[in-house]
Amino acid sequence: MKKLLAAVALAILALGHGLPAGAITATGDAAPDFTLSTLDGATSYTLSDLKGQVVYIDFWASWCGPCRKSFPEVQALQSEYKDRPFQVLALSLDRRAGDGLKFIQAQKSTLTALFDDGGAVANAYGVRSIPSMFIVGPDGKVAYSTVGFDPRAMPQIKSTIDGLLAQVEGGKGKGASADHGTADRATAERME
Image (tube, rainbow, N blue to C red; front, side):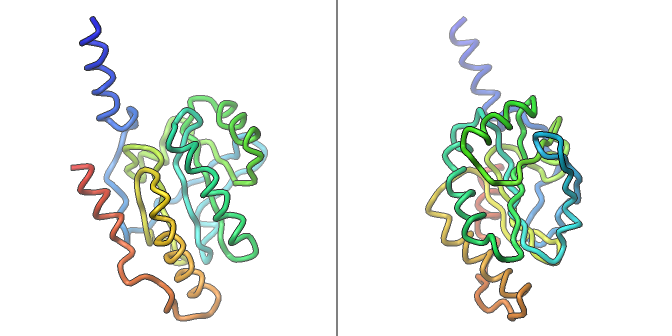
C-alpha cells in the first residue's frame, strides 16, 4: 500500500502539481490575454489594459513551498519598481480564492493578487509547475520566463525588467540583456 501511495504521489509531482497545460508560452510569443478578478473579488484586471508597461506575471499557490519562499523577492520587485511603469500580477492557483487571500493578508503583501479559478490562464501559458513566472514587455510579448524559484536568477530578472523599462521610459533598451531566453530554454529542457 505504501508503494502505491508513493507511486501516486510521484506521478502527481511529475505532472507538475496536476496542472493541465497547453503549449508553453516562450520568449518572443505574444502573452495570452486574460481578465481576472482580485482574490477578494473587488477589482478585475485585463493584461492587455497594461500594454505599454512591464508586467511580471507570477503563477503561485498558498500551499506551494517554493512559491511561499519566492514571495518576499516578488514583493521586493514590486516595491523597487513601484514608481515606474511596472506591475506585478500574482495569479493564485489555489482551489478557493479565500485560501490565497488569507496567505496574502498574512504576508501583509501589496501585490496585485488575482484568482485564476480553474487554472485557465495557467493552461493558456503552458504552466506545468509552480511557481512559474513570465515578464511581459511593453509590446505585449513575453521577454523572459522561468519555472521554480532560485534567488540566483534575480539579477537576470532585474536586468530584463530594467532593459524593458528603458524602452518604455524613452531609452533604447541598452540595459536589456541580449539573451532573455536563457531561462526559457532551460525550462523547456527540464520539461522534456
